Length: 265
Length: 285
Image (cartoon, rainbow over all chains, first blue to last red; front, side):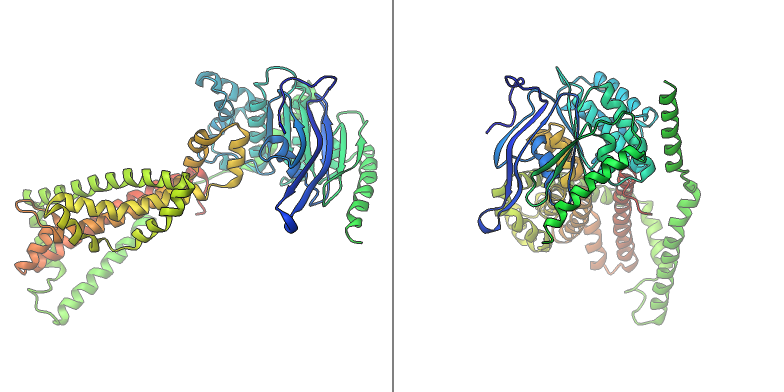
């Protein structure tokens, strides 16, 4: 059961591939099936949003792809792509300055100090935080901290040798106010296009999923299964409050409610 | 392009709004705010002290008043012997504490990393912490005789468990989210320890150091009272000597010196802790 393979498999055009992935927590009678036979491809440069109610195992799914946890059965391949991850909490290290937090992304790869510094500055500039490198994380607002986390994740994915890097995002804007979230959506979309990233974005916010995704994958809850996939063929850049986004979001919400209602019966 | 500029402007505007202005009182004002409650407390203690002396419960050659005591202290401050005593005591305190830090670090690191060691020694370390260090002295004197080694031995035993425990607690309470972030950034085992776990445990380690110092200082005073080494003047030795010759002002004066040194060192630890809290944004004040 390997979690990574070198090179894209024969005939595959995927940056991330999940094949019949299941995850069970616990043993025997207390065993909890979190994910059940999930198969999913993310094409290079594709933006895929995973949507689901609580208990659908969407965070579990990201942890598995990130290698923080192992699937019980099935295979996950990220080929030779660098995998970076963002959490709902910025998860910055409070003992480091903003710049040093971003620099740390190059540390595990053994990049020389001067280069680390220069490249960290470049990524802070990319998220419009060029002037804040010397600050401490706690001196920034929540939205700014999340942008530092984005810069760090991008920095980490930048050393990818070929093809696009994979960015995993676990409800990264869930704790932010609507205004900030809106701006960060624009920001993320711009960077995703510039750097042709492959993104796997987990959220429980339907409009956010439609606003950002090329494809929205709806997971059912307990256990998490792929319930339905919705291609989003709306022109970019989209607005969260546009009629087209609202229409598709309403359709997906209805389907989501159906899934949730199954648990009430 | 115009859209991008506009976008950048909006983001910068929101950032500016969210950060707001930060103000901090001037140094003099902050110092005064810290100082006046302390000064008031000192004055109150002095008044109470004088009142007890004036009550006549004890004759003045047994319980000297503040005026007499401070006069005696002032005279002592002019004698070289006093500084030699302080120097000897501080040297013992610092070597003992430094060795305790070393021992505590090694034990703490080992116990926090290795599960078996934790199971074996975790409870023992906490147990040692609660053991009054003076209870070690008979054994230490048996081992080392009436020497400085006996004192250092007990100082280390008094301080090292607290320091080790501080590190262990810090490692245990490393936020899981930071561990995950470190893992995603590609750190494993030793590099995870170095870049995430150790820095994350710093506040707790510092608290352990502070507590360790308090234990070291107590053990040292007990040691200097019990292990009096000929021809070597120390604060504890002077305390014992003052009692033998019924020098009440000298005895109380020495106690004040011991207390003051304890307070000054504690303030240093507090300053270090305050700096750390400000840098990490843990400061709620």
